[in-house]
Length: 117
Image (tube, rainbow, N blue to C red):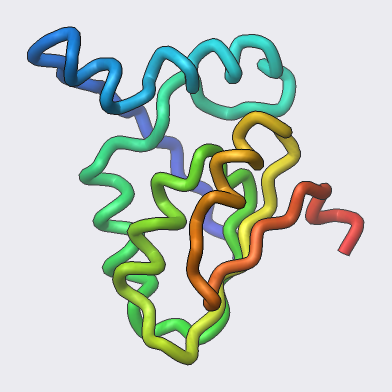
């Protein structure tokens, strides 16, 4: 059985510096350019990423489809054990560049369609 969840994420920005630190503008521009394949116009909120990280903590193999800029990937890596693996798929080349900057031997980023595996 596959469960599909629909999330609406709101972002509260207290000042302009915070906006730039979160990299929302770059994410939104990339999402708009590739709107047919990108499912969000802002990255997942810190709360959503932390919750997904926590529910992933006891898993040994995790596959993340549409990893975006890696917000959720980083939280998962904080929670999983040293012998766990996370494989992240991302088709968008700009987002993939962000993913490959994650330096963790438990993490593999792939710039390909999951259907090709």
